[in-house]
Image (cartoon, rainbow, N blue to C red; front, top):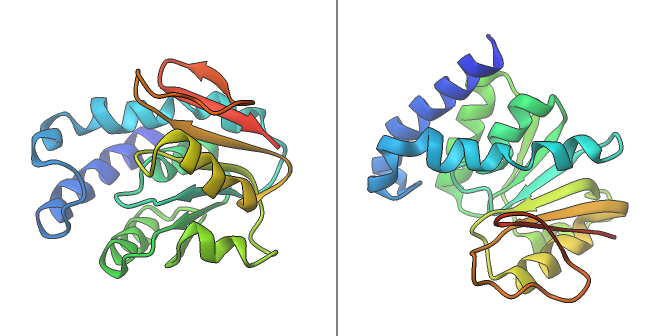
Length: 173
C-alpha cells in the first residue's frame, strides 16, 4: 500500500473508532486530513534531520502526530499512550497498516524511568503547554535527540527552545 493509501486508511480507522473512543472532536472528523494529518506531517523535515534511530510520540491518543510521521518517515516509532482503550486503537492501526511501531501503554514519566527507552526524536501534539511538554520529552531523548512540540500562536516558549515553523517548536538536547 502506498503512503497515501496508508494515510487514507488511517483516516478511515479514526472515523470508524472516534465515536466510541472520543479520539478527536466530532467537528474535526470531516476535516481530519487537513486539520490533523497534514498538520502532523509538517514536522517531517525535523524527523528527517535526526540521526538514525527510534522516534517517540508521547500522549499519542488518536496517533497524532506519530502515525502519519511513521507512515512517511519509514522509521521505527514508539507510541506512548497510557489509556488502555486508545492504546488498543493504536495497536489496531499499527496492525492494519503494517507499521514499524510499538505501542507502549505508559506515560512519558514511566518511560523516562527506563533507560532503554531513549529516542532520536520525541514529539508531543496537544499534550501539555510547551514548557511542560518539553520537560516530559527531554528524559526520553538520547544525546543529540530532538524534542518537537506543537503549540498555539500565543504560547510562550521556554528558554532555549527554537520556533521552527508556525506552531511547531524544537530543542536539541
